[in-house]
Structures are given as structure tokens and as C-alpha cells.
Length: 294
Image (cartoon, rainbow, N blue to C red; front, side, top):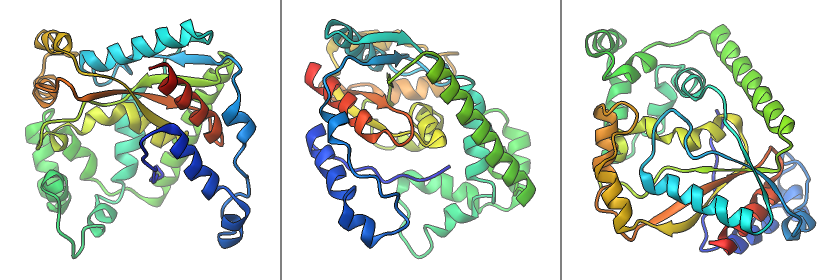
């Protein structure tokens, strides 16, 4: 699962300017390991109608009402602008999160994760994860057994996997990636519109809701270009609807998410825009379209 450094900017044009500066001949000469593919201005500047896949939930971690509203409003605006919207459902998200992401990321028992913090101050929000990785393997296994399912993540990070198991996981990721691309191509999609986690959590809550990152982690696993565009803000109506929110099972995770996003009136609400590999210009072009219509 590759890490990705993503630029942040006030608008999409600034992001495009950043990409133009990075995808140029001078940069290719400085770093020969980068594929020498210059920025495609024609794709970014195109005004041709797009065929857009969309979904407002991945079925793994139900998001707050305002996030689903954001996707719905963006979808309606895109349709009104002449784009074609097609329902799209990424397959087996629980499998992606529990098998492909968590088990691969912590395949060494969290050793590489801990090394990042060696000699550094650990942010309070990350201390629970860091402390979990520091626990002896036997303690992790006992906790996983005694506290299952509330601390099911402990079981995932408690086992060090062999090289053979790592290669098998890598192969599983490639197989899943091929399945998603095939589904994408069968529907003849250009891009996908989908939710992103938000609005901003109350301080102290991000560390309690690792599973809520499924909406973005999917595209880290797939290694697809994706960007986030604010399209609205949390309203009083969203807050009222949140009071009735029960999530998927009305379990501790759903209740924690409800607490994390309560009192967010006026905070930005965004959507996620996704394209296929090596289609960063198309992703940016779609982001620009969503930004313009919002």
C-alpha cells in the first residue's frame, strides 16, 4: 500500500499549476526514476461531457448525513451541466480494509510504523496506535482474544507475516485492482464521484475512528489518483438529521462518529474525485468541474 504526498491548495487551478511544475523536463532530468510523462494540458482544459460513476456510501463505515448530501448535490449539478452519471459500487470494501490494507500495512507487527517515531514526539492522537504496536506480541494476542470484537484491530497488528505471506498479499492487491479496473471499463467510466470522510472531527476523535478512513483508503490501496473538493458546509438541517443517525448497527463505532462530527455547523463538506492510474490531469479536470458547479 503506497504512501502518497498530496499537495493542498485554495483552488484546483493552483493544484494544476503545481502538477505542471512537477511534470516537466527539468524534473525528469533531476529524477530519472520518474516516468517522463509531461502534464497534458489538453485533457485538463477539455470541456467534453464526462461519464461519471458515483456512490454515496461504500457500505463499510456509514458517513454522517451531510457527506451523503454533498455527493447527492454534486451529482445533481453534474447532471444538470450535461455529464452522464452512472451508479458505481466498488466491490468488497470490508475485504479491502481488513485483509488488503490492515494486514499488509502491519505485516511486520507495526515495526516500520514505530520506526517513523523513533526519537520524535508522538502526537497524542497517534499514541493509542503507537502503544498498541509497542505491546509484546503475546499481550496483543491475549487482548485480541479477550476484547474481541471491540479491539479487533489488535489481532490484525499482532502477527508478523512471512515473506511468502507478504508476496501473497501483494498479489491479492493486484488481483483486486484488476477487478476494479475491469468494472470501471465495463461501465465505460471516465471518473468516479464518491464521499470522503468529514466534516472535521472534534479534537481527540480521529484516533478513535481508524475504520472511518475506508472512503479514502480504498484509493490508496488501488493507487488511483484522487482529490477532494469542498462543495458545501454543514447546515442546521444536517445537525438535526445527525441526531437521528444510527449508522449501520448503532454500535460504539457509530455513536463515536456521531459525537465526533456533532456541532460542525458551518464547517466545509467535500466530495472525492477519482480517476484511473496515470490520469491525474483527468482527475484535476473533474475536480475543476465540481468546483465550478458548487
